[in-house]
Image 1 (cartoon, rainbow, N blue to C red):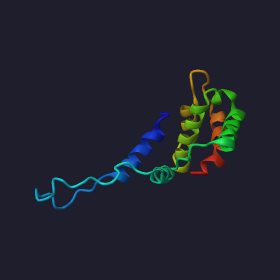
Image 2: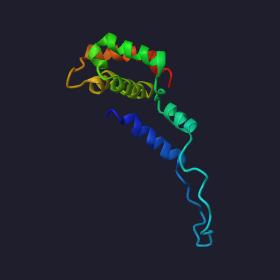
Image 3: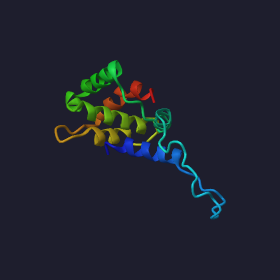
Length: 137
């Protein structure tokens, strides 16, 4: 579930970069035709695709520190692995920004670990703590 954002982003990018089929599929096409200059999307396209699905950019500096502090204020165990905490937060933002139902349940599932099972009240606090960060998407 932690890689949901990556999967959604890859699907969005695949959609953006998919080749369209020509209505003329005859054998008259040139066999030596060169492929497009680049088959991989540029950074701007990737960022735009991420934004379109409600995924905030990877936080750095003060934004990352503030995000981790907000999650630690709910429970320090949520940030035991900072990279996982950031991934979880970004993925939860996709649910929040996408208008998903059962956001508290989703936060419980997403942020729970073997070291800490997130309670429903904590899940509500997580969603509240993510409010400002999720607006960056």
